[in-house]
Length: 331
Image (cartoon, rainbow, N blue to C red):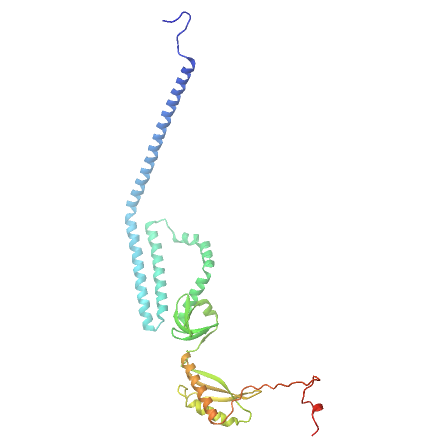
């Protein structure tokens, strides 16, 4: 029962909130529906893309098989060429390392060619010329970046091809000297006489002067012997040459020689020349034998081997030499 004069109806602010909530609910329902629809559309697009890719793969599958067969065939051809290069190197006495380099280059070249042919088979629109044009600027940058590596590589090829020295030779390059252990496309490796290993880039070896000590079977050795001014030069020369000829390890031909080289302040210097095997160990051994035998023979012959003399003159109290004519007593 209502009181007289009171109107019964909905409260104004409550009705406003109810209408607002209804609008938000309808908008949220519409947003969710749109999101679900968009998600479904996206999944449908992905599904269609995957299906198209699968269809294209199935369609290209024979081409892929043919491309793979082409790559394998070119790789096998490269292996065959490598074996032929090794066999040809053995028949022609080509350096084994050079034959191996040629074989590796053949394998790499044919493998790359096989990949390009396979790419044309799988993708008919692919043009190797376009790839080469695209790599033009890149190849220049790569060339500058690998300049030293390429220089050493080509220098190694030239060393193996021209063979100025071979493995086992004793050489000297700049300040390094030793026995050649290995020649690769990048470096030449030496074992020094002190048992140390030196790796020299082929670019430095090819552009530097190289002394090959064992290129010939014999090497000439020289050293100096000094005798006194009062000793006869002819007797000393014959004594020295007789000893050198009888020393084990000295080659009879060319014959040893002994020449006067210098009239030094304290001695007459004779240079002794003889030939022996070119290996460093042999040179040191024979040189020691010759020097020892010469010293003993000259001592036996009574020929002096003087050492440098120094004359010291002491001044007197007046600052002049004591042996000046003014200070000498009359005779």
